[in-house]
Image (cartoon, rainbow, N blue to C red):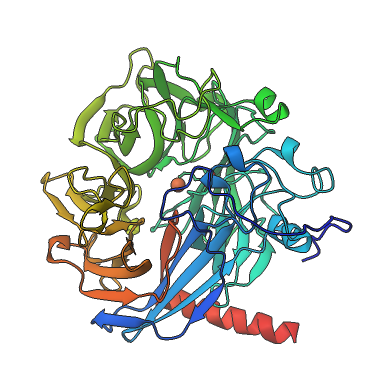
Length: 520
Ligand SMILES: C=Cc1ccc(O)c(OC)c1
Ligand SMILES: [Fe+2]
């Protein structure tokens, strides 16, 4: 890809300062690309499991330009794959070769500035290259592996080699300049339901909601405006509706132009909104805005329709969930982390009903701090029962040794499986020195019943300073892992990932080999 900007002056040395908002586990930027053939496996991986687990970690390739106020969300996307077949596992990790990474490799230093603020990029690259990091999710659709960041179009990677191929424009049909990192795949239709926010420019309230069909072309598109511009990180999709959470993490063009952050937390806001549009044939004037109580929407869990109502599930933060962004007074880290929780709430309301009264949560299903929930993706938008989610159990702080704690808070030391129907809650901790990264669900076999399968989850093992990939029977996590797949090193805490069935990986392998042959 010809993205390199000529004439960028190079640096004289590289040193990562330690004083920006990283957890202890993430203090070291690991920055490696790796291949490990045949990972060590303790226990047994059922031979029926065939496929690949892809995930991404933000991993600063160079020391940030503005280290004092740098935030972890600005690391360069470094994608890992675990390919599993016949009980064997191979590992691979490659950076997404974004225009930003290539330009910075050429300069051997950061030339892009703050998180999503082009006004802080160096003039040589500002307005020339998009500084996207492709660091938030990896999703497979239409035979393509897409590395996603919500400020830019997807970047395509070869699912086998993890080589970066280029931008995806959905066969020329993509018009929105931004693209969510949390698109929703409909298992029945093969569609990918997507949106972009700040779609009409930085800090614009414009949302572009669109649907990509199974062959990778956009079939539905509608543009409309939210009441205010904010971080719309995730959303809900059902058979007939699309719902956008509107929170108080507001975008400010003025703040960006002053060299500040992209977002600020509006601590004066006493409510949030749910924006509802029809999934098919929507017109801008169809958008309806329902008020809901104070809190912060970030990740969703799932949604479905029942008796004409929408049922929406999410963990909802009680206060600013990204404390590194300033509030409206310019203060950072203004909340007491011990007081902020993220309970799992369920909402139920009629999308055709009146927006006059505030939509209250129907129920608080799980209290405490819960994040990174995943479902059996085949049930997305449909009636379902279980979420697998990480939880902070403050009574079991993660230990480095007998008298030293790894972190002031306990971290995501607990994996939970919660059943909304039976209200059964299973939980599991992996020893006293481990936290977890986001899990992913693996169907037991083709055609297996909904929620019948396995769970793959990375554990950060503090004492050994390495990661293990744990395989659970998803229906009984209390039994502990069936297999422990050992990495010979540690990974950084990642964000999101996907399980891709072996048949799709093999189809992609053929496409990859053909591409390689063409190049030679
Ligand atoms: C977890 C949420 C989240 C939200 C916005 C981001 O840019 C991001 O980058 C890694 C992550
Ligand atoms: Fe996310």
